[in-house]
Length: 330
Ligand SMILES: *[C@@H]1O[C@H](CO)[C@@H](O)[C@H](O)[C@H]1NC(C)=O
Ligand SMILES: *[C@@H]1O[C@H](CO)[C@@H](O)[C@H](O)[C@H]1NC(C)=O
Ligand SMILES: *[C@@H]1O[C@H](CO)[C@@H](O)[C@H](O)[C@H]1NC(C)=O
Ligand SMILES: *[C@@H]1O[C@H](CO)[C@@H](O)[C@H](O)[C@H]1NC(C)=O
Ligand SMILES: *[C@@H]1O[C@H](CO)[C@@H](O)[C@H](O)[C@H]1NC(C)=O
Image (cartoon, rainbow, N blue to C red; front, side, top):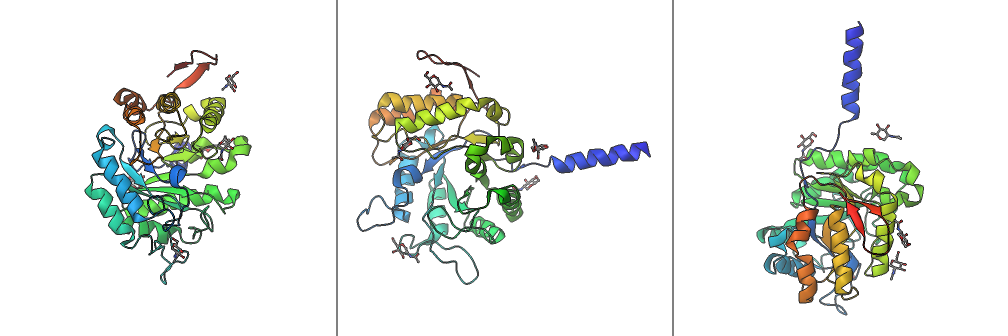
């Protein structure tokens, strides 16, 4: 009888610690995302080269494949918000804005795959995306299936227009729906980023069991001030983050903005350095068609990238804070 009880207890334990086991992103993902450079610019008449349409993603993918980025490890081309039509189709499926994506998303995924790259898309767990487009609430399974049919390799699931109290149920539900498609899809959650002011409530163990990566803090923007604010915040909570950080489960301090004219070369170098010490995702948001040779070299620095991509995936912590020099350990 005692033995049987033990068996039951052990079984229950395994059932509880079931965790995201899709085998993906064993090193931090690297790629390019539109958001912090192009935001939700949908006026393609005024901004023909800088609006959210298929040409933007195809041309960034071309540059990533042909200008050396792919060779040093950059891999994913990420569509961000504002790609959708405001209405779902009759079967309740998401569709792309047909004016801006005349060939559809599957065509774009194929285009990206043919360059030897991977394809990533954006949705939101709530009723609407942050930009006001249709959210996944009530459609999680349909949307997971749609993404799999389009050969999507990576989903960023935002958390605008959602109840924070529903997230512990909803984000794991999408994890199961993605798994059920049978297609390996990296799962990036914005879940804890909606609990910034309630750090006591954030259970990183739980989040790391359901997501391959997760945003913790405010959106980055194209300024040094923004980089500094992220570094300070991350350092404040570094023990909590380091404890759950590793292969297949990454804290995401947000995009690499090196490559934008708002940063000096030293500032660009500093961001690449700190993000790599953290083993953070290196997902650029800049215009790959228009990067200075210096900043291109910074973005493609193989030694720095090797630290970021170290197979152990340790989160390097700040140990001494003096104005100069910074000192870090791993
Ligand atoms: C597609 O985007 C354009 C702006 O580029 C907008 O005027 C149009 O209403 C959108 N179409 C749909 C169906 O959402
Ligand atoms: C689904 O989950 C199972 C169990 O964790 C895992 O073995 C499998 O590889 C996953 N499949 C996909 C497509 O993610
Ligand atoms: C955090 O989540 C884990 C896994 O779900 C659970 O075992 C643990 O009890 C939770 N911790 C707190 C403080 O709620
Ligand atoms: C960028 O982020 C910083 C730090 O959070 C903030 O102070 C600043 O106002 C932001 N700039 C813009 C243009 O949003
Ligand atoms: C490090 O020191 C600077 C200057 O004193 C301060 O602004 C910053 O908040 C400190 N960062 C941490 C993580 O303690």
